View 1 (cartoon, rainbow, N blue to C red):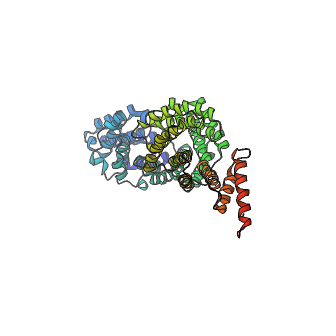
View 2 (view 1 turned 90 degrees about the vertical axis):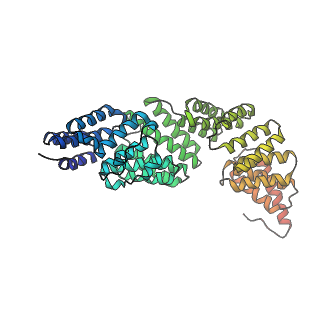
View 3 (view 1 turned 135 degrees about the vertical axis):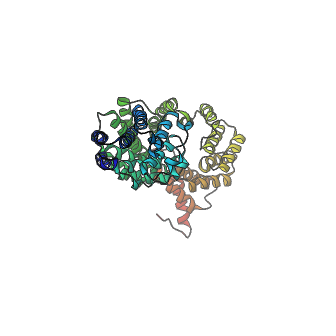
Length: 469
């Protein structure tokens, strides 16, 4: 006779190599050589393997629990049995499922605590999951990376994206093949959201060679690769390479069409890339698809992007209608920006007092750049040049260098200073020069900025100063 301690280490070795067939065979062999009590333990271990298949093996997991209890009624008190039962219930009932019992959450057996962790995450008890005492290093290799991934999911849901990115990277380091690619991509997505572009690039570079080809035949691998292209497109956009971003997102869309369904995220990023390239009508179509595809909390994001594209096309009434829909979503985190965009609609429609009031409210709520742009334009309408200057200087200070808003800030500041009679020619020169370095050839601003710069240079040379390049 034997006990579970004999075959479980061999099973874990097989699982570390991804050989589930061999793992199940070893557990069956152990069952044949054991007395009923140990047979129950082997059946529970088989149930733990079935649980790793998620929703694909719920019947097998349920049968394992029933068989373990039949072989040894005492198995129903085993922490692993309790944890697996809680996981099964969480997969059926979601957030309505009861939490795993304390005997499972605080078990000496790390395998039981792993499945308790899974149950907590599946049932949305993220705080309890993050606080569960489970070091991934306690677990065999095939579970260690999965535990890190579950903890990452919990921390991400709790808003701790930095810790979540670290845990996904830890999970990636503990596995190989397709699972490693997915973990690297999960980490990259969080790094992108945090603006850690170099680290995101490294994670994506590490993931790409794992895929078998540019057009995998396996549907799941193809969809994972589509996600890679989607993330790479976001990275390229953040780096200012809109052409490359469009190429990447089109590759993602192609893989989706061949192997799955169109997704909201791909349509949204496609719209963003097209909008950045000035192809606004095409962007509008992409954002419209994103709105149609979006579900739940994703919809306001797509609706907001659609409204901004409509503003870019100078269609403020339609933009206003879309923004008012978003404004009724209390959980949308960019309500200040929505308020600023509504103020922009009012400005475009000639409702200056209403635009100013809305922009001032948006500024108080933290939408510094879009609100300041509206306030600057309204001040210019009233010919309040000093006020306008203050607003556009605020735009420059709050915008990333080289961005569209940063450029507008320098263009408008140079123009206002010129209208004020070149009282500070060095400032006019500096703003005009910086704007010219980022203003495309043929843009209508080119001639105006060159004239301002040249006039400022003449005034500076006529005095005691000289122009510095």
